[in-house]
Amino acid sequence: MKIATAAYPLDMLASWADYAAKLSDWVADAARQGADLAVFPEYGAMELATLAGPEAAGDLERSLHAVSERIADADDLHGDLAAKHGLHILAGSAPVLDPDLGPRPVNRARLFTPTGARGHQDKQIMTRFERDTWHVAAGGPLRLFDTALGKIGILICYDSEFPLLGRALAEADLILVPSCTEALTGYSRVRIGAMARALETQCVSVMSSIVGTADWSPAVDICTGMGGIFGPPDTGFPATGVIAEGVMNRPGWTVAEIDPARIAQVRADGVVLNRRHWTDQNGRDTSVTPVALR
Image (cartoon, rainbow, N blue to C red):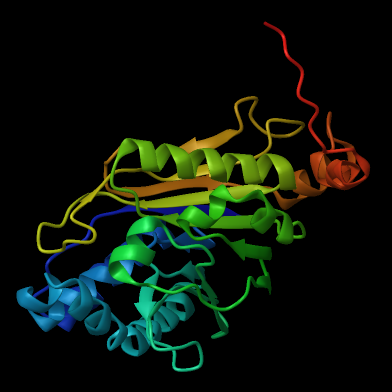
């Protein structure tokens, strides 16, 4: 399969037609490059707030509601494009007000298949900005999606930095890591998390990023990153674990071909077997004995 992962800039949109044209062009470009899966970044839907006007887009609380109100239409557009081009799409995540989960929005990524099936994954652990300033809430449970491309898990940005969340997705062939990071430090944390999850789970992880400036938003005004596709540095994969990566802050797709058989092979007969040996930790004495060496 071929995977395309985005370094995606946010735009000030004049109309819904502008958004539909932009998204259609991006998906068509991924399809032209042979992608079976296109991965957009965390908060990639925030540009929808500009459709409510610059004042709404520039207000933290109003922007959350403005995006949430557009998500049903955005989902239909993504579904149509997945069917038209015959590929899977992870849409840019969005603040979504879900009455089943409480009064505050969750950070939700939505997955679309060419056959019309849809699923979603909510972010599990909020960053300081999300919880203290934006008041975005943790959403529904982790999910594992059984697709024609294999089993797919999603760890949204900060979630990728927590190994037990990754371990819960131990059956995943692909772990998608849509991200939105302001500085190189944040990008690096998520990248390291994505690579660690690929190492531990002996799978492929796919990181997407927002890039560039969006001066109209106090939430996603400056973003740093690039696309990256990672595997375990072991049998059948690059020695660095980096299958493909883009150029820092340059918009566009990073594309790589992945052979699912290599995932099965490294899990069965890698030089090391991290995934299988994970439970060896359970029987270890993890108490710490202080030892003074002064």
